[in-house]
Structure formats: structure tokens, C-alpha cells
Image 1 (tube, rainbow, N blue to C red):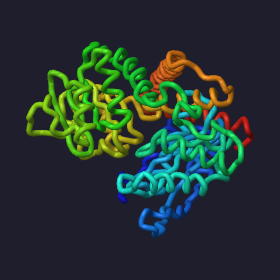
Image 2: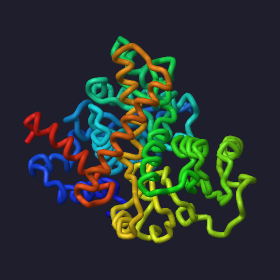
Image 3: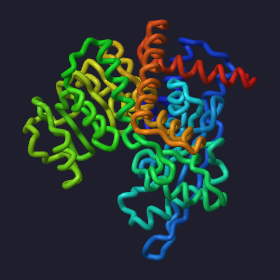
Image 4: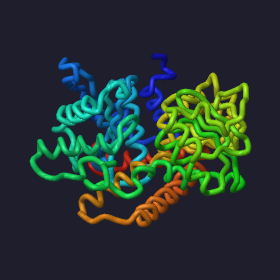
Amino acid sequence: MSKNNDAFANALSQLAQVQKLIKIDQNIFAQLQTPQRILEVSIPVKMDNGKIQVFTGYRSQFNDARGPFKGGIRFHQDVNISEVKALSAWMTWKTAVVDIPLGGGKGGVIVDSKKLSPGELERLSRGYLQAIFKFVGPNLDVPAPDVYTDPKIMGWMLDEYEKIAGFHQPGVITGKPLSIGGSQARGYSTAQGAFFVLRQAAQKMGLRKDATVAIEGFGNAGAHLAEILQKNGYRIVALSDSKGTIVNFMGLDVAGVKKHKAKTGSVVGYSGAEKIKNLSILSQAADIFVPSALENSITAENVKNIKAKLIVEVANGPTTPEADAILAKKNILVVPDILANAGGVVVSYLEQVQNAYGYYWSEQKVLKKLEDIMTKSFAAVWKEKMKHATTLRMGAYALAVERVAQAMQDRGRN
């Protein structure tokens, strides 16, 4: 894996950059170079044909100075230790940047879950939870859904945890179905949070209410954000998924694309799209570009194709450090992932609070709390950007790393 696509090397290079700006205590900085704990587990699963297949799973617990580790679990064939470590570091900064009392963790299993039957998927999910049981809990480490995991899988994992523990503990996992302690709005909270910060950034840049948007990735976050933006007057001109890109400069009908994808498995072939030659989502003419797929989609090689004035990172780590430097030179404003996609973890935190209370809020109340937190966080990051005369990413990092360092100092970890 080349360095510029090694996710953890990217995370460390961002940290080194921010250290030049804020110069936190060297002893604390040394501890922030590595996760506090890494688990690698074997998960034997009896397949439908009676044979046992052994899957490899990971959990990286990066830092818990501000509260219990927190972070999703992804099921993907490309899961690797570097990616899981990087995602756990980014979660640490993410919870700190939105100022919620949690740390950062991340988990993953190397699997192409599309090839598993429902029964095999359930056995794998329960097996992973059994393997990490001793290291998770509401006051220790709280998992959640991520790429190719969902509320159903979280429900199985919660059930498995409670079976082993012998008592109810809804706060051990967030992103659960509503019937077993999930929160209203959790299903689209990442997109909703991204919308709240996108709106602030668009205002700062003087973009019109009907600005054009291209979204890479039409999964949970991308599809929900497309709907929310369209409802609020933005024009969605390009959408893509792993199979390809569709474009309509008059604006795509998001509900129609959603129906088409549900029927065919892809956005490609949607009848309301124009036939154009260049189908790279990055090079479409749009005011706002939203990378909402996987890491490293904006690289030094393709960054020159970007025509957008504003980039809102809904995916984790979609921009390599080399590409980031080029975007800064071109004066393209980037709302970084640790702020832009923090809506999911904010509502996860609100879910935990409700679980601890045993009292649940209305969707409206959850959305109001989310809006307040995201708007306040954007303002704090913008202030930090201006103070250090730097990019929004470095402003977010400065704020987050300072908060984590302060918590470590106050615990005497220096």
C-alpha cells in the first residue's frame, strides 16, 4: 500500500501538521501517535453448507481521555488494520470537535457481506460481538453501524451482548432499531448534520439558495443528503455509486433515482439523466461537491478536475493530504469529515443519553439538539481557522486536538 493511500499514515500526517500550529505538550503528542489498544480477533462462523469459515475482525480503541471509546463497525472486504486505526483516530477528533463526552474507536470485519446469507450474516455479527465482549460496554466502548452494517445488525449485537451479560444494557450499542432503544432521526443523522454545516459554509461563501450539488456515493448518507438538499432548494446535478455516474444539469429527481436504484441496484441507467461523455463525478460542474463514498477518493492525480467552490466531506478521509494541499492553494473551501459527518455520532450520543435516562425524545427534539450542536461546532471551527489563518480542516483539528490534550493533561497523562 503506497504511503499516500495508507489511511493511518494520512491520519498521522494531519496530526503532525496541526502540531506545528498548536504545539501541544510533547509527551501528550507522543501518546497521540498510536491507539491505546488494538484487538485482532478470529470469528469462526458455521456457514450454511456446514463448513466453518474463520473471519478476521478488528477493534481499534484510540483515545478515551474525554469519555468511553466510540465508533462504528464496518463489514467490508478491504478492511485492514491501518484503516481501522485511522478511523479510530478520526473518531477521537470528531467527538472532540463537536464537544461530546466520548473518545474514539472503530471496528471492522474483513468480509464481502453481500455474499453471505441472512443466517450467515447474523452468526458473523453475533460472533464478532462475542469476540470483543470484554472490551465493550456503555462506560467502556460503544460500537455503532458503519459501512455495510445497519440497525438490524446492531440489534443482533445488542442481543448477543445482553445474553452474555445476563441483563439489559441498551447503551452498549447505538444505531439500534427504535423498538429496542434506538433514537429518532438516527437513520439519517449523518446527512442531516452534514446539511446543517453545509448550509453554514454556503452562507459564508455567499452561495445562492439554489446552488448546484454533485454527490459521490448514493448509500445511506449520500441518498439522505440528496433528499434533504433538494427539499431545501438546492439543485442536485450529479450522483454516483460504485457502478457509475448520472448527470442532469437541470437537476435530478432524487426520489426517482432512489426508486431506480432500489429496482436495479444502481443509479446507472436512470431515465432522467443526460447522455454525456465524461462521467467522472469529480469533474462535473457543480458549486458544491460532496464525497460520500470511501477513503482516498480525491487524490493528487484527480484533484485538478474538481470545479466546485465548496467540498463537504461526508465520507471519512476522502481527501489525501497531497490533494488537500492543492485544494488549499486553489482556495476551494473544504468542510472536513471530522466536522461534516459528525451528525451520526452526535445522535449516537443522544441515543446513549436517552438509554441512560430510560426516557425518549421526539424526532423534532433530537433534530433541534443536533442543529444546535452542529451550528455551534461550525462556528467554533471557523473561529479557530481565522485565529490560525489556516484551512477549515486545520481549524477543526486544532480545536479537537487541543480538547483531547486538555483532557489528558487534566488526568495527569503528561
